[in-house]
Image: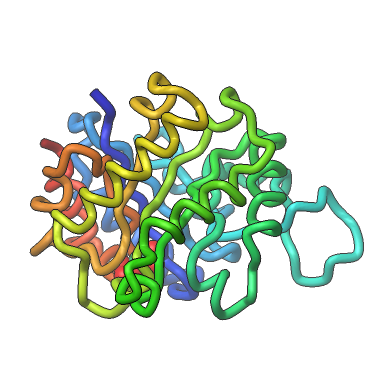
Length: 253
Ligand code: PGA
């Protein structure tokens, strides 16, 4: 059985004080005895170091929302994997659809980032998912197929086992319109099969595949109950401690 992992992607929200308040509220409400669900928070870069100190000795883990693949150098505005490690990050979100569409990140760039993250000991949360137009054209499977193939090019089985996959249909992100549990399960099952053909059934069975896209307390239980959905990557609903905690609770099944 795979454990569920619920991650909160704060995106560009919360300054330092707001971050402290949100983390305090999450800590207060989290049932630490409920070790069945792993919890990750991904605040903006400016709050990572403080977040790391605040979650010390708790079950909450820390992730970043992005990084660059180079180790160091003249890359103004960028942050490396080792910098993230040095402030206590264990995870990094890579390939998020907002990075792909707003910032033009290609599968090739994401692949380099994944390799660099793993080399530095970070666990990538690798996001994939189709747009509405692609889904309507019946291309959802083809798109996730390509994203997996290109994003994971050259990654060994051992390296792959450090990766969490997040299936996030672009049309469901921030729109309030989630995929139905059946729609999500169908693609999750497909992704697991695809992983099995690349890395073998044992790796596929162990792989955590999160669902993301308008997850909220009202729909999370049904989504989390699907066989191949192993947790959630939560955006909007992770910005309020109550709704984030409710989603975590609903994953404890
Ligand atoms: P959402 O975002 O929950 O606000 O749809 C999810 C994500 O982008 O990871």
